[in-house]
Length: 133
Image (tube, rainbow, N blue to C red; front, side, top):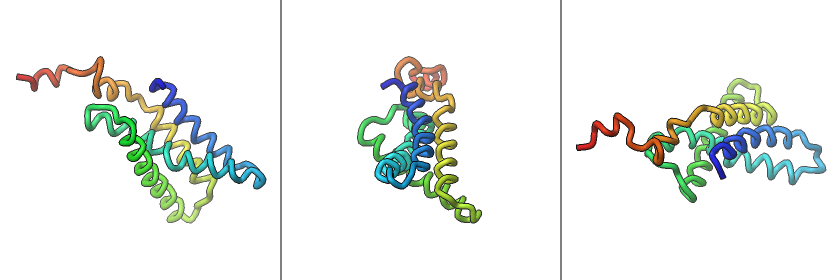
């Protein structure tokens, strides 16, 4: 899957989870599955595309990407929930809405240069060439 499709998938996932949270009680299993999938993977995957390739000069793959996405997601979910809790305004819709906005912003952030420097066409920039003997 191309990076553009992944970015659009991350953007749409938050808004789909927010819409699923408004489903009636009769569709509870669908609501739980969609919301849980978003909360466990998507905020972390969006954050991972911003931080990981720039730091390690390569794109994470497979199990590494899944584990880091889940860990980042749990951390981001906890921080957002705590912010709403301490402001005494926590609701499910506000928390999922804030995470949807945050995930969309991270997915929309222009990471073209980060991905290019991670390998492939952008490898060997001018600053890298100065370091070579």
